[in-house]
Figure 1 (tube, rainbow, N blue to C red):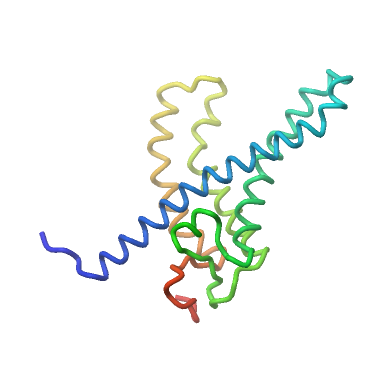
Figure 2 (cartoon, rainbow, N blue to C red; figure 1 turned 60 degrees about the vertical axis):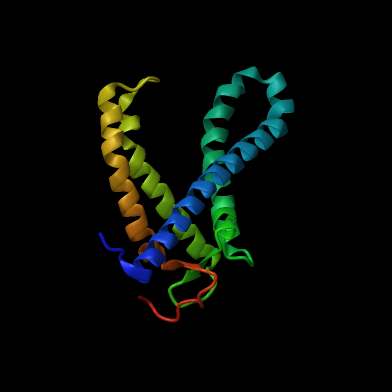
Length: 178
């Protein structure tokens, strides 16, 4: 079997960098959500110490809010920063640009993050159907079937919908919509 040549090697190298950077960013976003939840917990601890009935309500509001705002802060604010990349993309020498080659705006980075949330919902919908703490085997099978489709949709459409591109830093920014 012959190699696909230098172009095929370059494409495979880019996707290895991009997937690894996204994996690192997943952990970074999860960590930022946990930190935000802990900060909110410390801030509310004085009030909740004397109002025990409010603890379930606090958890119902603070946990989902932390897991929405924490990753948004990680992804949108870092992609909008002067580096134009999250930590994973920085480590692998990638940068986010608009389709016109400009640095991404906060609105563009927020659109990118909304596409990530939509991809996560597409990937994890079988777990929402379970209704129990321990999903059945059917839910795990549905999850295994939906994950590849969600990854394909995410990497196929996130840049198109948000009007952005992830480009290696060693190449100049794109000047036209490709």
